[in-house]
Length: 464
Image (cartoon, rainbow, N blue to C red; front, side):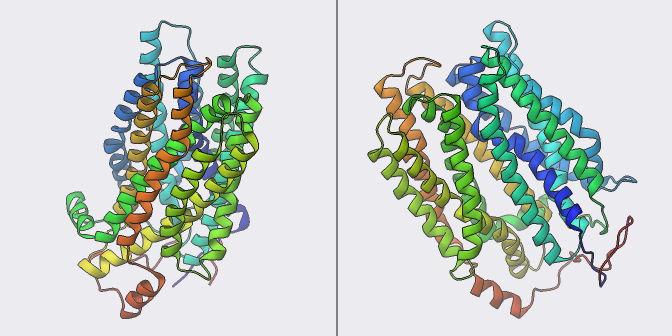
């Protein structure tokens, strides 16, 4: 079988696509809630409903985009054209979402709904093709693994750009108007994201023939529900995302109000979390060479709950140094599971094939993507509801009750979701030993043919 080796340049181009995607993901997880309350001027209760309702759109757009990419191809390939033709609308959607019109409250709320729906649809329209394209760049597992390493690196670079640059530029470039500052700062991020998607288009080549899943949608869904290990990962994804997004969304409030900081401290606090996440990815790779990755997943998330309680009970308002140290440790431990989780999905697909003698791959990954977005929507609702419950008022001196609520939302509340996540992983049984034993027995033949006899759809230099 002919295999395709990717150049470093193409791997960088592939990684650039995830950097573009993460401009939006990082903004949605770390900045947008704070932007909507303290800059745009929405009430927390309205934000809670906005996040919950708009995320329901993903239940339609995610599978619809998957069907579209399966059904249509062009002379540029099946996935790359979306980077070319939707990169500019994608950038515009980001810019508009972080623009604050001078309107009455009701009209501004309608504007927020319209732009958030727009950015959500554009995000899906480029993300589904992006997460699918690795399968057609090369049919070599080794090359795919290497390319994904570039992808994860550039994703964290994008998160760094958002957390380091945006809060500082919003203060410095606004000319005294923080709304203008955020519009300009996120406008810059939008331009960068657009250029990164265009670079991804021109730097990559689709080589492997795409195989459309032949089984009907509802049959695939039925098979997935029989895959108990995939179902565990779905529950893990939702609970973990809720915890992660609650903590990330309230970090800006914590730095500003609980620690008494300005835009620079907010940037430093958010960047501390991202930096710890990058180090955690490196550490996780090393640890799993010597220790069971499933056990690492389980016990790291239980440890998150312990560290969360420690952060809440030991840090007082204004206790900056201790807060930074414990937040770094917490963010480091939280992300130790990330590389394990994404590799576990592929293993759960193989497990499903071994159990049902039928393989469902595309919908398995798409389903996890939907679970992640559902978790983000639920987390956004919880954050908005809790801010309202704890009587938060934007850009004012907060009461002790409100400060306590902000501290709980950064620590104990998300920690409980991570504890649940770790406990759920005790239901996940595909350890390295289990997986190797399963593969040694051989996966059963099924009606889904693997990628073989790859067809060169475009120019490239395949390696034997």
